[in-house]
Image (cartoon, rainbow, N blue to C red; front, side, top):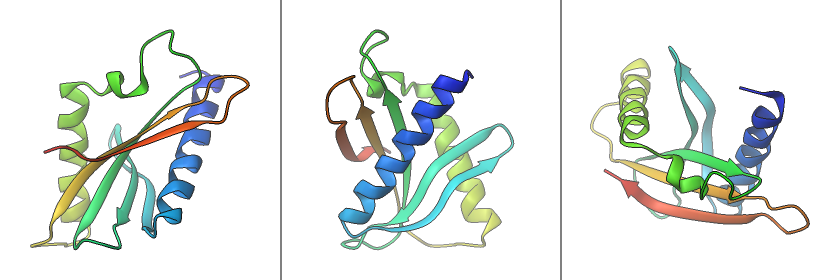
Length: 122
């Protein structure tokens, strides 16, 4: 991963955290890593029980498509596996879980466009 790509990702995650906080979410953990995988944000929704596992996708252009287009079936499978490991690792049982996606499109000269897809996949 290039420095520019990492920088875009970090900026996107920071914008996503601020977005979630502005909606009343509590951020439990950022960048939970297990092996080669990662969950960007683990949070609590103020209006629902359980945990929200959030995948953040950021792009500075549409050259490679919309940020959401980069979430493949394999990526979904990886996120679910890491969420299960987080629950196991923290001895969390019998809790509702949801998977959200936040896409950030940060085109030059424009305000970042943030889309929050609640319950993006099962």
